[in-house]
Length: 609
Ligand code: ADP
Ligand code: MG
Ligand code: ZN
Image (cartoon, rainbow, N blue to C red):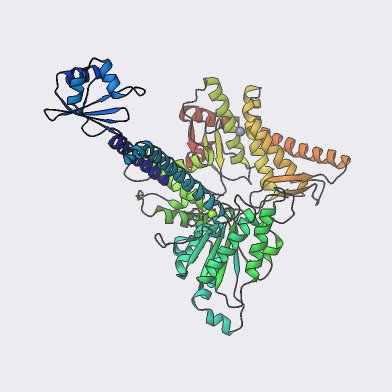
């Protein structure tokens, strides 16, 4: 863009210069007065004219008083004839010094050519500009040669201490750094140098951050390229880019070459997903070739990051290539606290802020989510004109990140408010009564995102495994809203539809995936899941019609069981439900402690699913 503006400026300057030149050559600086032929004739008759110089049709007249004027004659007729026909006498004409000059050749050519030449030069200049522009475009297209390799600068140096948690990953990478610092120790003992380390983990778990930390700690040149940059417009570019990237890194050895998002090129070759792409395969092949081409003591370590390790070509993962794989998990509660602490640096927090409680409320958050949460909290505090960020801002930011912003402005009728209050109260009460359910953190009837209200329950510690009775408690709780509406109003609203969908999905999974139904320890259906994301991308039926109807029956059984449990709890504790709903209508939200205080007088009996 800047070169474009520069070109415009140049074009304008040229235009001005050309215009100036034109004006100099065509309009003489001080043009003599022009007179008509009639005036000239009468001047000659009154013998004030000294001489007339005729060149072509141009008459340059010098007066006796020394001044000069010009005039123009007709092209066809001679000058004497013209003057005579205008009544100039022979005598008077003889007194005038009449010279006929053929126009000087210089002047003639100049008049003819200069405008033409200038125009040509100008057009040529424009063409040159255009070509130059086009040429840079073309160059960019063919400049694969240079692989956009960025040599990391240490402007904002990241160190391992800036990365919270990820203990195993850090240990693995510290070894790599150690190798780059003293390779002799490893080589002497005959150890092969690690060539490639693959960092795998969900988006936002800190892969790129960790790679930057390696660069910061090892003090060797660090080359960064995103694999998507390998694949561009032209076939073959990716492969030569790869070659160039590796060459650059080798020249700078010892060095680190970091290929981010390697799944962009490293997909399993010939796999259906995304269709065959020759370009990608060529690039991948080139990466394989380059990594094989390392000598035993080439001191280049290739780091790569991906969030889809499951789709990578097996050849990439073979020993001698990315033989080390480091999995970056979502942070657990302690790590979340540590990450929050790191990002709290440079922000003013209230003294009473308990980041531990924020960590408790944010299971499933990635490092990037937590960084975002910290920022949201700061923004909320700033919006409230506070000098420091308080606990409320953190909790609010967490909810905002999970559920979307509050929509207090949404108008709801009193009736709707009542239904929502009983609905959410039903969820919360069932959760409180079920022995295996997670504690309720917050209930609210302020709509957020698409939810009309919500009941937030969170485990007190990180869970990696879940039991059948916990699932049953979850199912009962999901049914709590539906059951409460039915019980109190004798009618059901659409507000429960999302609960029902989730409950149905969960119940079906209990049957087909976890072997938790009467059908016994068997899974049904083959499905491919997106690693980490837990989203199904395809599923295939591998059972008979008969089994299919049995699965439906079992699923239905789970759902009905959960509904009955919820109903029973709500019926026996109807007074408690009314209390919760009334409080919600009055205050809109109930926090954890307040909720359990509210329930104390009702002495709710724990129920198992
Ligand atoms: P990705 O795994 O998608 O490459 P990044 O490394 O880009 O994720 O992480 C994004 C941001 O999240 C980082 O810039 C950092 O601010 C934050 N973050 C992620 N993980 C951590 C961590 N373990 N410690 C501190 N900050 C983290
Ligand atoms: Mg990244
Ligand atoms: Zn609900």
